[in-house]
Image (tube, rainbow over all chains, first blue to last red; front, side, top):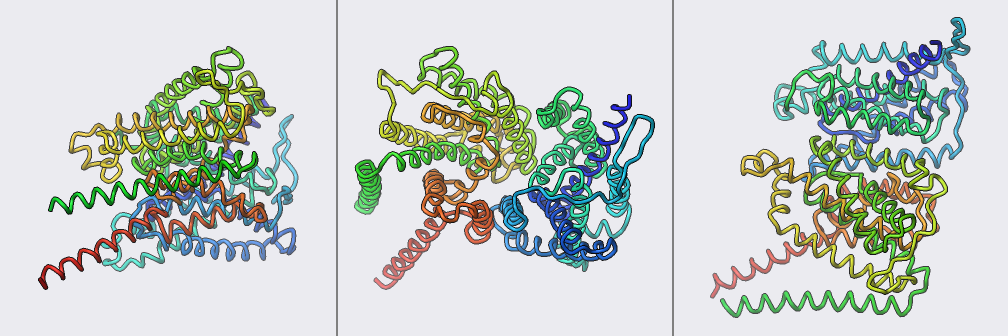
Length: 287
Length: 335
């Protein structure tokens, strides 16, 4: 029973991280209509930058948060202007997507060249662990849960309820109409990019104490994408629920196997695609 | 008018003859000069050409970005290795069976995956590549696990044993030629044309009565056949298999090959595959920066020449033709 509760909490926490990443996918698809294959690498970059700020520059928590926000925002804007801007009017519609694949290679290799191959260690955000009976849970999982709930609900409210959310999504629905109505399209797209890098960067930092800072962190992206598809790509709700499901499946699969965890997730993905091609939680059936 | 047409035909055959002669000269010079090391590199480049043709079919003709080429390469490779080593099936037959097995698996996967559109398909294929890598690396009974699969029997076709790299080189040249020819043929069939229609405008294609779903499934299966042939050849040429031959990175390098040459061009795929395999050998000093260079070249390719090398050649040709036409029109109006 204790292992079950432990697996559930770990699964939920990882599910939150996957949910944040798949929200990143959905936000970019909603604001410019392309998929970003470099999500995982931005996430990893967040962990590496946090390592430099905390371990090498020895910043205090508040100084860290401020400088990290600035750094992530700059990365977001640079990412937008290098990877998306030059190809946005390319006659080959897949050019911007392929570009993000290139970006993923560049970021991960740049990290390897700057910080080296060896996994780096970041101390936990909140040290210690909670003991409930025989159950021991690292505080880091609790921190991830709190961060996840806050970020996910903020993004959900922003995009589904607030007026600003509609403006942020207007560019992809009708670029021309949005411009005519006076929406500063470039600004809204830049804001989306910055939001995404902030979300990903800080989740990278929170996950780092559990998994070390290494290039393997980029592998989270595929699982979060699986989550987004399982849940249904059309809606934020689907992406969130699907990703949390993936986190739980991954955690519970530790009962059976340790090497085929990924195969479990993608097996689920294939089954969902066969039964409900639009995802489990999508609102509308058909196309 | 007639003489004009004759002249055009003459010029065309002249060009083809020139190209054939050029390839022949390169092959002859290469085989007389090369040592085993060069044969190893060029042979693997030729095998990658076949895999790149598979992606060219999916991505260039069909607009489906697939990273699952390595999956089918792996299935082909491990299937033929097991059939020929464990079950002692003759190698030429085992390659055929491996291709059949891979096509069957591709069919089952295609039923699920081709329902997804555009980038969703691409991501699902990444998932597939990751699963297959996990299985190749860990499933000991069929793949030998992390130690790899050694002592795959040598290929024997019609009594000829392919035991040295020179023989392999000639065999691979023939196979690449046949593969390229068949791909060009597919481009001109109903399947190729409906595929291009789907790529350019799915709704318009549907309204013309094209069955999108089945066209995509057939294409996926054909592409998997190319991939599994490449994999099976790797198995018999190297006589050793490891899961590291079928990683996601290899899939990305196929993507670079196809894009460098020109996404929708058979010659382009061949050119791209040869360049991407050979260039790292020429610049061995930069080995540790190779992936970074890959990444930068992908972005640069997309920004500056999204249609690749053959696209640039085509646009130059087009310009020259337009100049000629202009000149001719001037001559007509003057005379």
